[in-house]
Amino acid sequence: MGRPASARPQLCANEMEADLSHFNIDAPRWDQRTFLGRVKHFFNITDPRTVLVPEWELDWAKAMVEKSRMGIVPPATQVEQLLYAKKLYDSAFHPDTGEKMNIIGRMSFQVPGGMIITGFMLQFYRWDPGARKWGA
Image 1 (cartoon, rainbow, N blue to C red):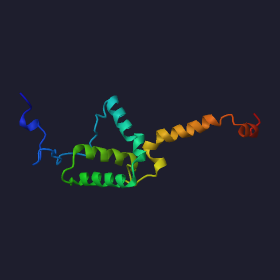
Image 2: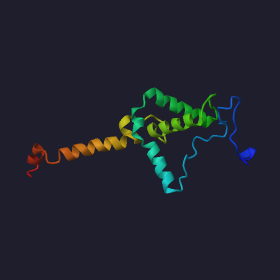
Image 3: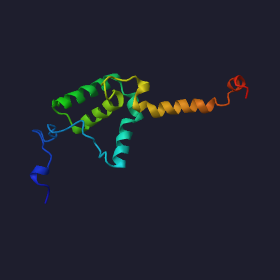
Image 4: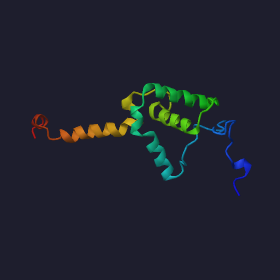
């Protein structure tokens, strides 16, 4: 049968762009009442690949998120672009102040950064000069 007309996504003139006038960029992408939804959200904002994103792309993401919050979405923008912009924004900008954080303070750096620190701690645990200093 198909969906009723009210349940179908609205398409713009060229039939390729979805109508984004009712898109809420701050709405959770996954259901935060479930464990799986919270895990997906956490993995999304801590994705280590976002550490390698250039500064100009982070600035683009911030502009896209701010425009979407104001209800101004540039023509030919797709939902996937807005979701990617939100992912970059959440991973690189402070949630309260909106300022860009340095690379070490970002959520996306915590896993690779923690691995580096842990590796050094394990490597130099019984390092000779350190062991002599403490008399062990």
